[in-house]
Image (cartoon, rainbow, N blue to C red; front, top):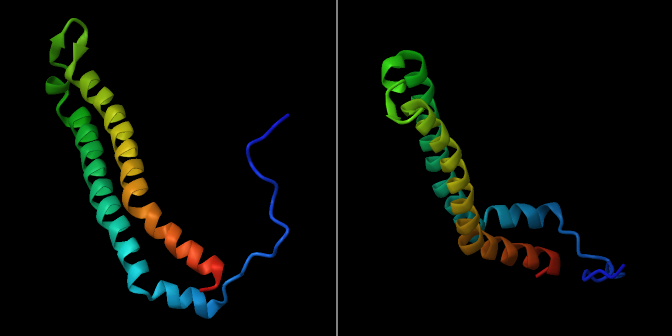
Amino acid sequence: MATETPPPSKTQAHLPSTEEFVAVQESAEFGELRSSHRGFAFPLTFAFIAWYLLYVLLSNYAGDFMGTKLFGNINVALALGIAQFLTTFLIAWWYARHAAAKLDPKADAIKSRMEGGA
């Protein structure tokens, strides 16, 4: 069976020392990477949890509203429940785009510098 992955390299990869890890962790570039990740992930996580809790609270305390028929057998509760799934997939897609555009290039640069021993 043919594979497109090359065999593992026989050369020993550079293993960074503890001092190198600490230096990278304290660098401005790593700080930007961490800030970019947190600036995206934390607000979106908070917003999604608030959206989920709103759905749960409405389900528990606003039964008449949630039971309101929109069309056919579709009511507000079902529509909001499906919206929960849609927002989950939307957030995952959005994060993947954000990571590919902003996080991965910075992380790859840091990783290659650490592995290269520069």
